[in-house]
Length: 323
Figure: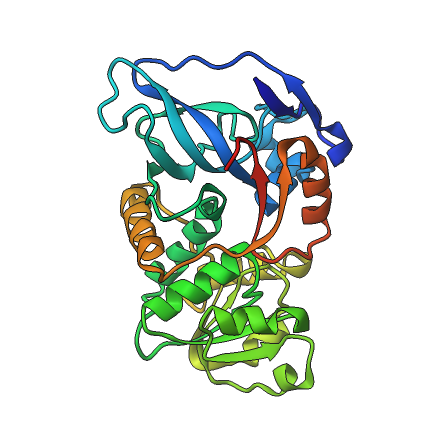
């Protein structure tokens, strides 16, 4: 089978499209044919990880040679003990981070992996959206976002930010989306109550009006988010922030036992409910993928180069099989 093989850290030039052995499922696994996957900030970061992250990804070289977390597939073969899936079934979800991923024609997944059936109305390329939604959903749940919550999503055009915007609106929150000027219409189309250019004077004039400020891209300084929060407001993020400011603020909050700064992380036990709810929202039209660009598997190095620019909106899709 063809795969995007990565055996060394470095630039996208390290990625080789090559033939590798087709995997064989164990009794509790399914072999799936990949129709679509993505290149995310996670994948890009795994290609050139900071030194501390190499303790997770591999000290001298990547522990796994095929990246790609989000996946939309058709079940090709099932192990003898598999009961949850059938051959020919359409499935979407996420590949485990410690095993080879979906940037290949086939991948093997445990039956208990974070995957579920894909509604017939959803195209494969519209279904590689779980990673961003998973992080955003964890924040919405942990901070009990709902009616009466005034939320600002900074970077609401990215994979996590666009997910947070949609999930918060679905929960009944009032959402202000802070995005770059070219993404203002996108944020409006996703249902934001208020949209502001994050580089504008209007954004600079926003006052202490938010219960939660959610930095979904890790680019806000402490001074920026502090001036936006109500006295009892919460700052949440998925990133360490500029010069690790958000991480330091979180550590200080832990020391003084304050809940003002949060870095909500998804819990593995929450996966089944998350996938079921996301699937229902997609089927009902309450949640949709935001696709920036699509590439063929053979063009995946170009996809990585684009993600490295930090300019993507939503998802960068990799088309593997015919969709």
